[in-house]
Length: 125
Image (cartoon, rainbow, N blue to C red; front, side, top):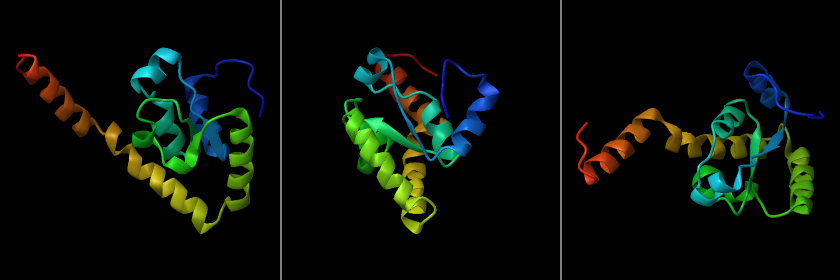
């Protein structure tokens, strides 16, 4: 697949569902603070493995170490390795590891975090 720009939101699930993997690129300001976008859970929930640049702050909280990439050559090598395990139990295990990492995105967990932060600065919910 060749991308030449943005795609409508409705097409994102189909693209992720058809893909083995995606590279989770972030603007530098997001990567510096570990602000992952909704694209990561969207990809994982569609079974698409998110290759994550290792320089993203807190990358291990978002994706398994196996999917952390450090260069274009590393992406190429990892994609070749993922193609070899596609459809196998090892592939299913890697998807399961990614699914387990999505807990951080649960609304209940985010609300608990917001409550803690707001109470620490004196705002009552």
